[in-house]
Image (cartoon, rainbow, N blue to C red; front, side, top):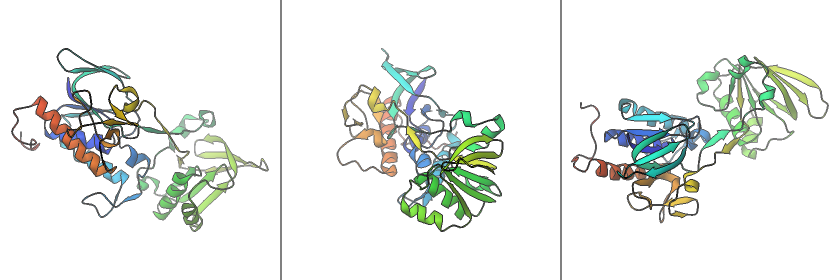
Length: 325
């Protein structure tokens, strides 16, 4: 039995789990994708964030890393399960819920929806292009830590904003041994500002208007779209940036709750029209809501505090000091 089932492992869901752990609530966080972090990881992993309290600047990767580090000492209360979705839930006579997940069912006392704009997953390479198992180990769809590229021959596939911006940022780190971007069109689809920055960096090799034909262990084969001339380039790390696709099954689509547009109407406790079901972050809707991460985290504390009061009505303190056993 879990005290709280949290749906979504973005910043709001992560911090909700931390705050629940501080109150000694047993929590399961489920995430539809294979990554913890949500939009900060997918959309601006290494892009600078200037409006998060206590930081002159940070980025999505560092922000999520700090949020997860904050709950390391609360592991006995917090569990994560990736590649998992909530299919349905049903209230039992006891007042608790049985939640049917994509892999199994669990019992819980409260449900907290923190799905934001829904999950994302990368658009992957055509599997037929990958010619051996060793090549798969060198293919990545997310940029996490630039230090992984130190003294590496790095190749980036793609021509949109993410591909072009990541290429310039990785180049600016001066870590790779070599850096190449390959795009199937003669021109990029990215913002011109990003393209201009890319063109100013002579250390970046640009291969345009080609079609990738095969990926082997450490070797990419491609041919020119106009001449059909075939060529190849070696690599140690291949970063694929073909974009993201939204995962369907957002909470607002399958939960029988009062909604306004695509978000769920909540009260001052973040509770929805169904008792003991809460929503925070971009999943939630109330007048004049500000769409900021810090807003979502404040909502997490409000919701968890309300849940805790129901589960532990006689607890006097606001939260439990985790260092005191």
